Length: 108
Image 1: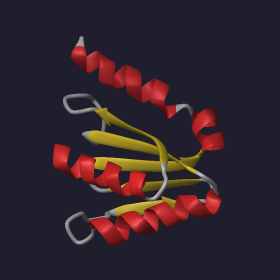
Image 2 (image 1 turned 45 degrees about the vertical axis):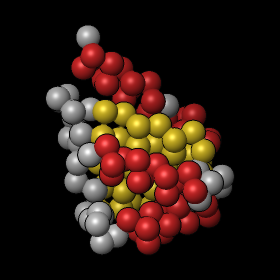
Image 3 (image 1 turned 90 degrees about the horizontal axis):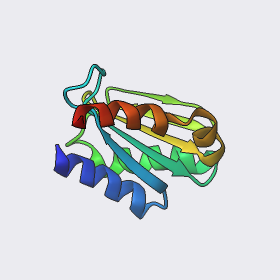
Image 4 (image 1 turned 120 degrees about the vertical axis):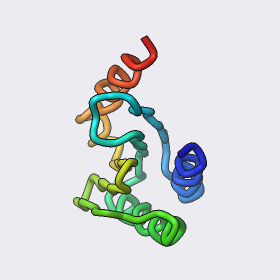
């Protein structure tokens, strides 16, 4: 799993995603084991990052589904969920707080 997360993070970083964070949610009451969140530079960059990931990760990774909007992309890899969003959306939805608390509960 760690190698997969490192590869995903590397693809995002190489293509100028910012503030990449990974949340380990194994053994939690959550529907995936890992969540990756990254910030895009703008709406076009958001979708471009998804395309870079597909090009660099497939066929080793299977994208079970994607949800694409102008400001936010979600990619479902089964046990990994990837959120790519503009800075405005990332601030607005503040998923890090929820996921961070959920991940922290595992360590307690």
